[in-house]
Amino acid sequence: MTDSSTTVRPDRRAEIAAGLARVRARIADACAAAGRDRAEVTMIAVTKTYPASDVLALAGLGVTDMGENRDQEAAGKAAEVAAAGVVPRWHFIGRLQRNKARSVVRYADVVQSVDSVRLARALGTAAEGRDRPVSALVQVSIDGDPARGGAVPGSSDPDTGLDAVAEAVAGAPALRLAGLMAVAPLEWEPERAFARLAEVAAAFRAVHPGATALSAGMSGDLEVAIRYGATHVRVGSALLGMRPTLR
Image (cartoon, rainbow, N blue to C red):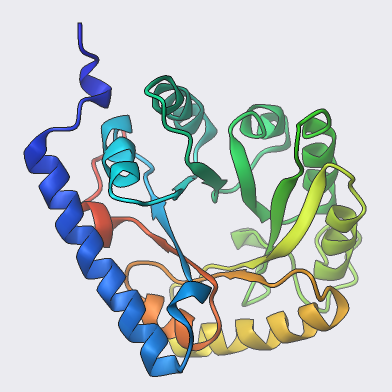
């Protein structure tokens, strides 16, 4: 019997292909406008709440990077996709509880939301024994509000200061410090948010020259993020349509 959760309907595949073409064109245009090489920007398809069949459709269309933000959904979906013979590069992009670290490292190659020393240590311990390190991005708090999550630039807090978190990641043998990730605060204009992030990223790379990844920008603001140096953009609704309601 065919598993309906991994069956790609032709009409859905066509819908996804059309969305993908539009997003790829937007990224290409944004790179051209910023004088950047298109190859510098990776699109992450954010597949949270979408079925495994959509992941398979995207993979069939050449998309290699998928993003999820809830382990309880992502773990099962990654297993379904793998059972269908497809192994994309999974990015965990949501807030991560330390007790979920061991589950996440079973399928995720990249964790973009490391925002505390305690989480970095838990993730580093969980990743021990993998055949390759987990690439970790430190999530930055652009506005410095601890309630939103994110490590705080310039803070001396031993758990959530950006420098402390970066050092904890860099010091974990099973992790690789890849760069930074941020979400623009809702009340900030994207221009202001990503200009601030670019400043933080430049200072960060001066200390950690190998940590060049900058994950910023989503469906509504990816052009601005690319103008300010994003190397990864996280795209869901513009690619896959209106998000299904969470149950």
